[in-house]
Image 1: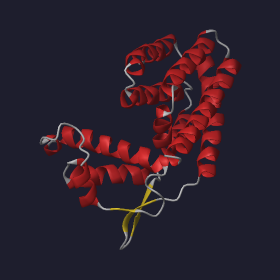
Image 2: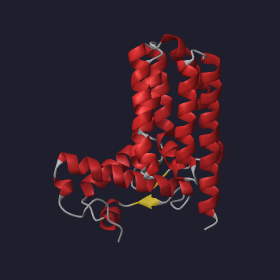
Image 3: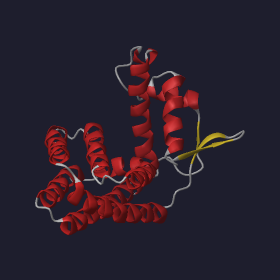
Image 4: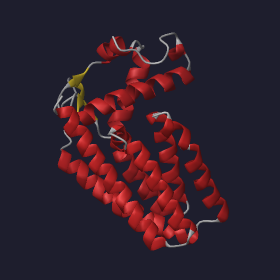
Length: 231
């Protein structure tokens, strides 16, 4: 049986439930992305609770988060089943996100304040430790904070809202692609290249680098899925 956390009663508190649900969600996300859990498979709360050594409460929260990201569907009488998301659909989503984020970073380059740039640089520095440790979850959180800081730096509320909405649909796959080869190292290096262009005030170069960053993530996800499909 696979357990998450320390196996104690950490799911008895709101903090423990949050930690366990995140870990369960992340484990299921990787399996869905890799095709281990195929479309149409039913996910039973009690079976998952037994598998992860948790109560049904964090499992239920993890499934709710997966449903919000479109990875599972809540169906009457069938319960929770893995949603059907084709590789082509995922690549289309990455392509759309790449263009949108390129637009955001271009505008942010010309509008962000020195404090906002300093905060971005700080996030980039913080990411060095989890990258060295291959700590995917911590890096994913910092990666998300990095991109969301860029959305805010556009100083365009509507654009930031749309970027967040698009990102939420891909958040699971954006995390999973970090596990492919040395992708986590390249992801951080690409952030550094984007930051350099921003610091130099070149929005066009920053946009091109962001677009490439997102398409590289899509390619990494494709390789991750192919590698695991053959095992």
